[in-house]
Length: 401
Picture 1 (spheres, rainbow, N blue to C red):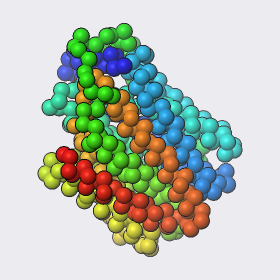
Picture 2 (picture 1 turned 90 degrees about the vertical axis):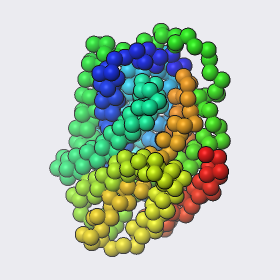
Picture 3 (picture 1 turned 135 degrees about the vertical axis):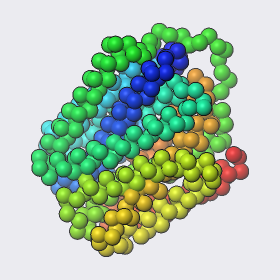
Picture 4 (picture 1 turned 60 degrees about the horizontal axis):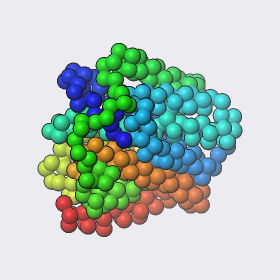
């Protein structure tokens, strides 16, 4: 399946770095779209008269379509070529996002979000495996760290831009502008890297002639892989629900709508720093200690945030909350890389991301039902309770690494 990735090993260093640069830009836009949708949901809900459950279902549809197309995207990369698929996926995502302009009803909004999920499914399994295959083992961690950091930068920049746009041209106009940015990036990527052949990857390549590896789906340490998947499931479910309902929680506290983009940007800034810093923290105290620290702090934040009244002194706490909210995922990627290897590792990444995005798909719907019954504050108490399930898995993982 990954024959299309084999040729990139012969790239010159400058071509390798250019590839990382472009893949990072695509990740920036890809993750930025997902986070911006969370920012726009209160405006979409007010315009289309949606309940919390319907709002949660919009995110559920988005993550469901992202999830179920993870493995097919990895398989398709072997036939069409990773470069073509990455550019085409981003272009599809951008056009679907812009199509929300026509969402005059809930059904049309669901259709647009579902279509966007298909385009958004391409990046993670294809882009991550492509960079993992491009860089040697000694440099792979920093390259993947750069790639993940770029995604969080997108979560800062695009929501902040959307926050400025939505109060001036509305949520529909914001979707068109943001969709146009992604489409321009996709076209530039295809033109520079495919037409000029900077690292064109041919689907006809048949690999390097080595004997097939004996690892199944690229998984070399099955039990540890499954434990990382379990921890990642609950961590992603918590993070998705926190982000979806954070704007609603701020509004319930009386925060002006014009501030939403800036407040979410503070959370995402902390998240970006968390992904970056927790990689180094893992080297100092290990994966188990880092996950224990970030999850404990995240649960504490979920318990405190609904009960605190809105004051300016809460602003410095938001980056800290974002730090621990996103920090665990960086540790997960580092640990996961040690359980995978070989030419088929993108299947392993695809399995992990499929389950991870499935968690992100289910949690907004489930917590949306909870919010309709008990209010948005109950969402955060529920997230704290669910996240306690990570600790037994973490204890088991500590016995096997």
